[in-house]
Length: 210
Image (cartoon, rainbow, N blue to C red):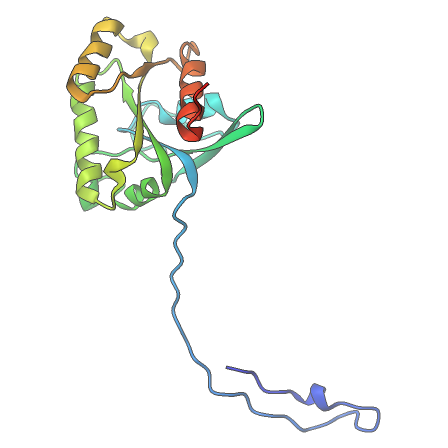
């Protein structure tokens, strides 16, 4: 509603202290909820301790908390990676566990952050003997949460390749056979494969053909 006029509005050279005022009009009140649908180009998802925060610290100037216990990341952390005239905003999403869509662990509010990312980078620990099972569990949580996030473009990457005691070619072929995706192996510690992964992120996000 339009506000009323105070006595200062009626002040003049001949009336220095007016006591005149007008009442405001009736007002209308509304509650408005705003939701930012895209807050990052890339959302890094995966189970706790998959190496998400370490990767973000390597490919950008972000300094997320890194420790050897689960749920070190309690809120999404953003980082920016640049390549000549292009840049990507990357979000480190707190770790997801089975039942996250029901609020277990850090809950579904972080699944909502995933909804606001353009591309998903699904990180899996290559030293984990059940990494393929871990992949299916996270995908199941995305599907149960809904909001169409399970249909987002996904890049699969296997971290900690320096600690992997399995044959990388065999593991890669197993992923390709079972889920239809060839993963990218990398190590944030040795930096091996990191540039390849970053190039894939840019190529996928910008639909580069080069």
